[in-house]
Image 1 (cartoon, rainbow, N blue to C red):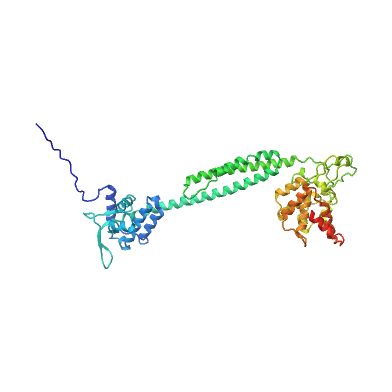
Image 2 (cartoon, rainbow, N blue to C red):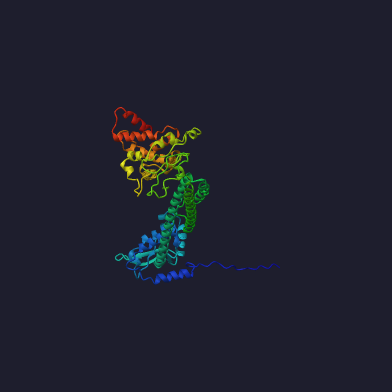
Length: 468
């Protein structure tokens, strides 16, 4: 016998409305209890808060676009007590206005509901319609999208916007600190490079770590934009601060090494050679230590020569003995005639601008004062520290000072005035290296010009000055 059993399946029943939920019931209650916006608040102020909060409050650009479209449909009277801002425009018409599908409209409405910006006031058949009073404009009845919950988001949106402003201010402050540290690091690295070129071998070995510092800087010197989170920006700032501290530590150590080297390199003696009969006269006013702020003392005298006595009439250096001078090629300073120039001659040949830089001390003037004046005038003549060091290494710092003195006069002469002092100074050093610089002739030419030009020797003097 065949048995047939019939299992009755549960049929779908029409729900007749939306699926209820605690959040939906809460928003409906809010709509019923709505007492209107405050007098100082407009409904478009709420839209402005939503736009400023943006993603921080869960609103995408498409959500904001639909919400703005609905806000335009409402009127100010809808946000007052006894009314509700209900948009009874059909979904089809909304989709056509925004150039999207009806399904997309429904999805965006659901997202706005989750964000707490709207609810629904539905009719039995989910149709949207309504009517306004022709005189007052107040809604008499309406079914559609209810924007009342947006009014309850005002305090929360203001808090989010305030937090975003604080975060933006912190981001900008972090950015400014990163920029400041970057500029300081680059400046310090350039300073280390200059000290490396000037310093002794020990300082150069330490400054060799500049390559590692530069590599570390290039690792963190990445581009950043406003999309980088604040936490990442703060981490980048911490790396810049750590590298800045390392660079400053290396820089301070280099300065200490250079200072120690300068103090320990003073090996020259002021005592005359045992075969020289001209003894130095003791000057009780000359009890100070020689100045070393312009360059190291080892670069202040011609190798193989003894220093001259102090005083305005003293020459820069005394020549070696005849038998010793023939053993080695002449120093560039000797070839330039530097040992034949006295301090008195330089003082008479100097311009008033140069003399203004000579330090005033309670003692007789010596060649160190000429050097200090030249070093102080150097920046005004656009002579770089690198060029000054090169001149001191080649001509001693006395020779470098004489070159500065001549350059200063060349810039002030009435005819054929020097327009590019830095290039002129470097040209003098190049001529000294080639043995073609004649400092003694140039100084003599300046002195003769001060006394009055000799018509027979005018051309010769100007020619010597141009060669210098």
